[in-house]
Length: 497
Image 1 (cartoon, rainbow, N blue to C red):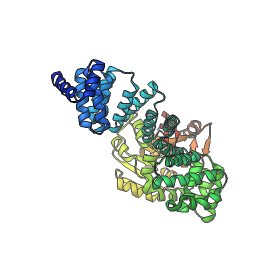
Image 2 (cartoon, rainbow, N blue to C red; image 1 turned 45 degrees about the vertical axis):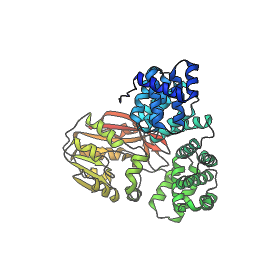
Image 3 (cartoon, rainbow, N blue to C red; image 1 turned 180 degrees about the horizontal axis):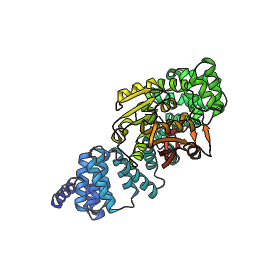
Image 4 (cartoon, one colour; image 1 turned 135 degrees about the horizontal axis):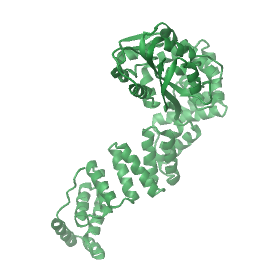
């Protein structure tokens, strides 16, 4: 921790004498309190308010040389250090203040703000929470916590914190601005538009991306209310010069409304889009999923078309936006059971996100995927001895007793009944080989085709399908976010009998 050197008391008293001689008000404050420290503090605050940060800091330091046990002076010094970008010294000063008084909400708030500036997220979060515990009406702390949780992509908790801030301080335009963005993420489109409008009313000018989001929110809300065609017709007038391509709006509306459970509106959009391109396998399959039609697996042409189009943006969307971390978590589970694999298969390898985590476990890694676009991205990333374009079950059936690890992160979500794939995986593994996989977790005992086009499986279904395996470990986890909400899933490691 950075040391703060306070002036010698003799130096401070000489300063006090000079100030008493030149500033009558200063002398009167000293007389009133019977001590120079309060007068120095008041003078320091005046310098701070007028932007003379270095002079304010020296004045607070002088006051502290006379009253080193005053937590408020240490907090003042921390704040002026922070205002002049002396963050490490600010951190030392505010921690000293809190060592003297742990029950000061303003000091915890100051620590939170300083830690936030230093990107010390855990310290900042703890400090915001301590501020709120001591002062539940501290609107700035609620907002700071909400913005921090927003950055951490803990959207629902962030939304709760920002809502609390807005209730406590309804004229804060930044709070309404944040509320608009968070409301959009959780698909509360009416609240999103209201919040953006209030932010603009409070003189916080909306930037073009935010105006686009507001136009989407109004359009999506109209669709939810049953006015799909009117919403698309009126979109250009709402968005004005910020309008996006109408095909993109319709595509994203279908995706967002199906993910957030507005299936009737999504189905109407899906029918319109399929009528425009009746041979499009992606539009056809996703409409079938929204309508709840029974299917054994996602069609291969759907998977190919979807992921060929998605490949260039796949990593940023899945990892950064949807908080996907399955390959790393699964590789850790595998390493807890075994390492030193001779031949490993990354089944449904995608862009090769798992390669770096699998390389320490063995010498030879093969990646298999149905999408040539995804394989091209995996080739750029590297780490594979071989990359193969093939359908998963067909490849496994042709690879008898070839692997001692099959790794399938986020691949089984495109299969309904898992029994055929499990039999094929057992055949491709040597006895004792491991199969590591992830599934989205379904309620009940069966398989559910979700409106997203992905299948969710129950553990009971997996256990019934995996008759050739012994399940070594299962870990419940959030697989990704969907419409801002966590998707529950399982990471599983099994051994071939």
